[in-house]
Length: 262
Image (cartoon, rainbow, N blue to C red; front, side, top):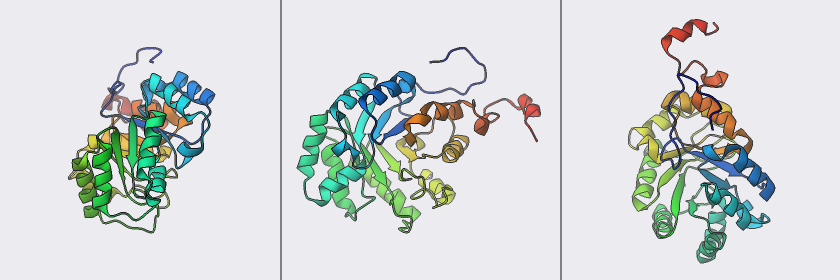
C-alpha cells in the first residue's frame, strides 16, 4: 500500500496479476514468519514456493498454505520435490500430497534428473486438470548446456501441454540456467527465447539484486520474476518502481537526467 502519492512512478499491475508477478522462496519459514511476511508484503507477492524438498519436511505446512492463500497468494512445492517423487515412481503419492496440503499450483521440472521431454509434457497435461502448472526449463548444473533453440522448443511444447507459465531456471543461487556461474545473464539466450515466446508467459528466476535490476531495466517494471528471497520482496518492489538507486533515473523523464551523478 502506498503511503503517499508520488509522480512519475511506473505503472504496476495489481492482483490478481498476469504480468509483474513476484514469486517468493520460502525455504523453511515458521507459520509466524509466514504471517509476518503476509502482513508486510502480501500486496506484492503472487506465488510462494516451498523451496527444494522443504515441502516434505516442514512443520505445519498446511497451516502456512492457509496463511498464504488467505492473503491471495498461490503456493506450491519446489520442482525438486516433484522430481524426487517421480524418480521413485511415486507420482500418485505426490498428487495426494498436493491435495492434502490444498496447494492450488504445482511446479513441473527436470532440473535435477534426466527425463524424456514427452514424459514431462504428459505430467504437465495431467496436472493441469487440477492445478495451475508452472513448468521449469533449464538445468541446475552449470556444466549442462542447453542450446537456445532447445530452450524455445521445450518452452513452447510445455505451454501447449497446459503450463500457465514457464520458468527460466536460475537456481536459488542465481548461478545456472539463464545465468553464468558468476551470475551474469545469458543475454543472447534470453533474447532468443523472447523472439519466440511472449514475455508475459515466462517467469525468470532472479534471486540476486543485480539480476532483478537487469531484467527490470531491459523489460520494464512488470516483468515476471521468481526465486525472490522472502526478506527482499519490498526491496524488489522499490527496484520495479525506481525507488532504489539501481533504477532511480530509469523511469524518470529526460528533464531529471541533469541531476544524475556523473
